[in-house]
Image (tube, rainbow, N blue to C red; front, side):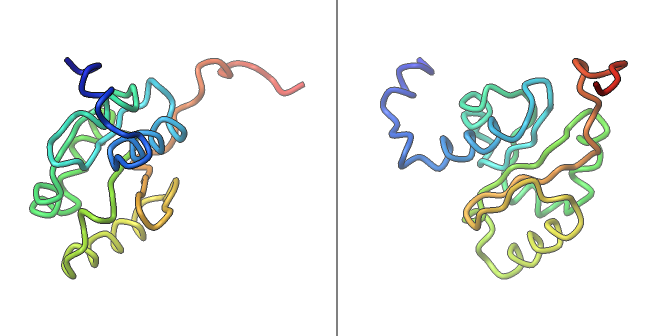
Length: 130
């Protein structure tokens, strides 16, 4: 059913596909992501990533404290669409988030924040530069 639904969705016009592309191009497959996408896991499916999905309202209700427990469980990134945060209070919240966490990407439509320091790349551990 998922594959059937993907076939109906235009990748160029789909906000979920574009957010998934940002996640896929900026994260490793083993890194966990929190996606703000109205509690719909589709963006994580499109990105071929694991993690959590939430709604902008849930994130706002918990403020930054919502992210800390998930970061403690391994979440490395927060990915979201700016359009989900257009009300003034939400815009202020996003500005605080962009100032607090390292910004991996922010193109004005979508943003990706790093919640924790990057783990060592397992392929490079124990290797010396040549």
